Image (cartoon, rainbow, N blue to C red):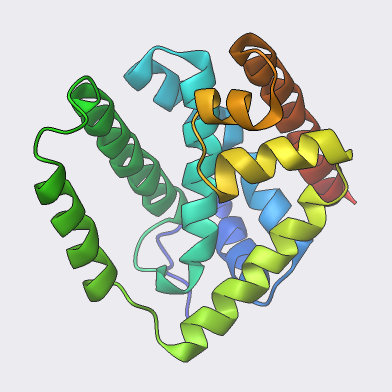
Amino acid sequence: MEVNNLFSDNAAADLALVELAKKGSEKAFAGLMNRYRDSIYFMLLKMVNNQSDADDLTIEAFGKAFRNLDLYTPKFAFSTWLFKIATNNCVDFIRKKQSLPAPFEGSQDFGDSIAGNIQSDLPDPEEILINRQKIEALNEVVNQLKPKYRKLINLRFYKEYSYSEISEELNIPIGTVKAELSRAKTLLYNILIKTGNR
């Protein structure tokens, strides 16, 4: 693959990590996350002005980027692509949050738009296999957490439960859910950073 000669050293290094990540390298995934986690987090924090939401959105942004890594092309820097994903995801989050007070208003339209997105974005069998391999690589990292933290990460990011739903599911206060999730995410980041530096 030809690398754009206008790329900075950082962008060229990112591209090398991307190519390794596409082949399923956990170390490459962790390296990319390690490089951009803080800058993505602080950008999102400015947008949502809430540390917990910014934390969640940071993980979601990396999750979306990693699941769609094969759609990235080196016509522009990986960081540009990643920040665009994070920004778009955050804008969607803000829109949804603003419409939450009236959950039943326009719910039919909301359902239709989801169905439309699913129909237009269905991956082909090869993409499904590649995405499954990437999810398995990330699962291996999550599986290094203690069971209680693993369950929290699973409910929040895989099943997309709200804090109140997690609170009901595990029969613990919402404040505890937020505190424990924060610890779980910190542990997850630390594992990823160690993997990236290994």
